[in-house]
Image (cartoon, rainbow, N blue to C red; front, side, top):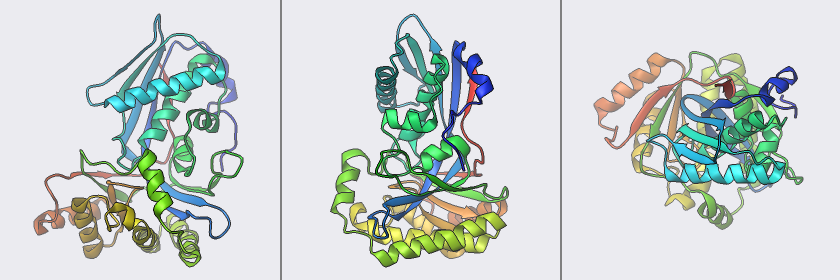
Length: 341
C-alpha cells in the first residue's frame, strides 16, 4: 500500500527544486468497474483498475520568460485548455507564479475510457511541483485539480501501475484509499479496441446519467465484491488466468446490465466494439468488457499468442469493423516517470 508521502524520494527534493525543465510520462488505465456505486453496503463506489502499456500522456514543462501552453499535432484543443486550467489552479493554491512553458507532447485519447483527464492533471501537477520544489503528494495534486472524486485507480495507477483496487472516496474529500496493488503476470496481454471519433460520457452528461439510474441492488454489489476478492485478485496473485478472466467478465456483465440504460440499452457505448469484444469472449478464454463509459473495449488473454490467434480468427469471421483501432499491449506494472531535461 502506498503512503501519503511526496512521490519523489526525500533525498531528491533539493535537486528537483533547482530543475529548469522536466518531462513526465503517465500511462493510460482501464477502469474495470465499480464495486458499489450506490453505497448499498455502506460505502460508495470502490473501483478496480489496470494500468496498460502503449498509451501515454507526455508533458514537458520548463521555466520561461512568458507563459505558454503548446501541443503536438495529435493533441486536441480540449487537452490544451485543461492543462492551462490546471496550471492556474496550482498557482492559485500554492502562490507560485513563475512563468512556464508547458508542452503537451502526447496525450491519451479524450473521453475514451483510458483516464485521460486524471493523467493529464497529475502529469501537469507533478511537473509543476518539481520545478517549484514543492513536496506535493499525488493526492495533493488530485485534490487541487479536482480529480479522484469517484475513483482512485487513476491516482494509484499514476503512482504504482499494476492491477489496483480502491475502497471508494471518504466523506473528507480525500482520494479513495488503495486496498490492493498487484502486478499482472508478465505473459498476459490485453487487446484494446478503440473507435476513434467516438467518445464516452463525461462531465455533466456523466453526472446526469448516474443520477438517472436506479441504485445498484445490494445483492449485485455483494456479488461484485465477491468476484473481486475471491476470483480476480487471487487469480492475478497466483497467475491463475481462468478465475481471473471469469471474475472480470462476470463483473462486466453485472455492471453492463446496470449501466446499459445510460448507453442506449447496451453494455457498450460502441456497437462495433461490442461485436468484436463479445465475439472474442465467446470464442476464446478471455476477460472481456468496456473500460468506464467507453467506447474502449478490452479482452485480456493469458498470452500474446492467444491474443494474436483470437484476433486473426475474428478478422476471418468478419467481426472486426474497419472503424476500429486495435492494439495488443501488456500491463504496466510501474508508475509514472519524471525525467529532468
